[in-house]
Image 1 (cartoon, rainbow, N blue to C red):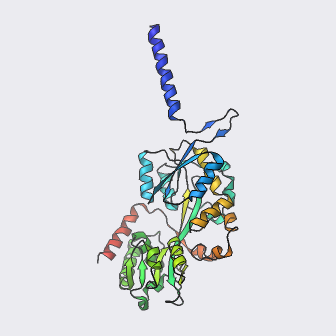
Image 2: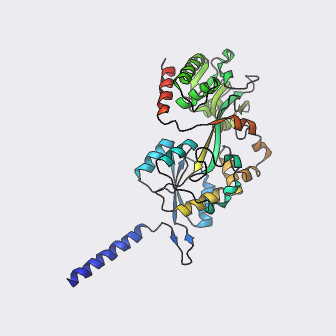
Image 3: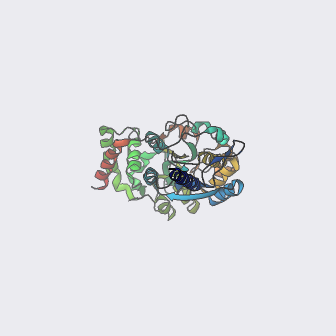
Length: 356
């Protein structure tokens, strides 16, 4: 009996040591009770969305290895996160996806005490409807869906309604993504993009069918099409894509339409499955340093919600319409909300438009 007890205790000891070995990268507390950083931080984000120079700066300063895995859609990110295949420490969901992830209990509450640089963010971008108290997310970069136009080809453009001008037939580009293009028609009709009633969708379908003869192509590659020459006069597209095209085609400019346009925000969030929340918060705080945040914007042509970083930017950058629109334009724009099952109705309408 004594021999059995001894064997049992040795077995327990082996299991304990194995468990410690498997958790070698997780956070722990030092001898003084302070939180210690993990050896590794696993980030799951959009491709090329955090500059390598920024990651290297964090690794050098904090001695933490950053592992960066890219994804191409919010759906891909959520699917892999729910599979539990990898315990990621940071993800970068778009605004309404934050709402969906909170409902599915996928995100940890963020401890803003560990992110004092949160104060650097512009007040108007804090506590948005998708995360009213910033309990689960921290704004990273934002942008819009608006109107790109060729200054040599069109005059007095003010809004979505100009896409329907018969003088521009064959020179219009529209997104091939259902919600984006249906939303253009809904706003043109004076309806909210977040109110897809049967009546509103029927009117949007009618408007899109009327627009179809004007459309040169439906594509998600707006940047490439706009940059290729002056054959596209007007396009509904993402501000960042238009900004890239503007660098190659000086005849282009960008605006939020008078009917509103659409704003989006990508956010830094911590999955509940993360073992390294403090390290993740330390990284988020690092990204919100004014100089680091500006460094991000120098590489990635999206709008920056960090007011202290924007203050460091050149006047040329601050006056770039693809990056920064007037405050009154931003207030007039809408944010996508999570439509749940209603999204299927929008997909159906779009199929009926492009299938005819």
